[in-house]
Image (cartoon, rainbow, N blue to C red; front, side):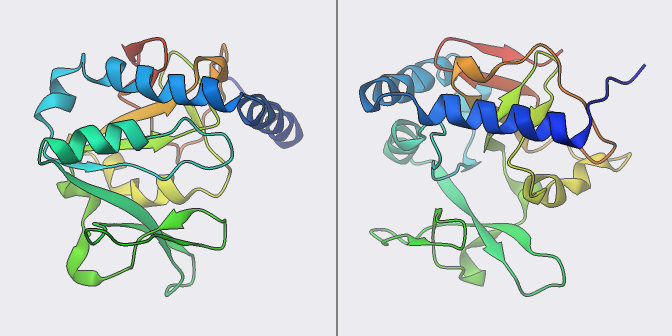
Length: 203
């Protein structure tokens, strides 16, 4: 039977986990970012990946700065999410930042690159996507911020003949793990989870 959780319990869990990661000292955050890269480097798929989407950390999320630097040094092509409001429901798309470009803050105060169409990629053409999360469980279920942006951007993966790409890896501090998360029919499960302590394939 599906595990359920009412909306208020889910929101309380989200708030608690967000506060826990916000409370992490700066030195702990820096260490976690370095250890996260060490965990990702254990994965052959990460070492092979050529086109990777990451995120700009905010709200205490585990930082991708070390990962981004590593990727750029190895000639990987990196993309960042940009929120577009040109449709009835706001959409997340992925853009390659211009070299040396200063990112600007969006309405959620998250830094994002210029939304140039020529530097945009179809998510299905990415090799790998590194996703932020608020909470995760061992089954690869992900609790996000509640906006549904990633689920909408990745909805194509629910089709029967969906491509295996991109490989979805949730990034988190180890303290964001919960025993079990409820799932909705629109939720896109993770393939892997990487924390500052381990990397594991979702069951």
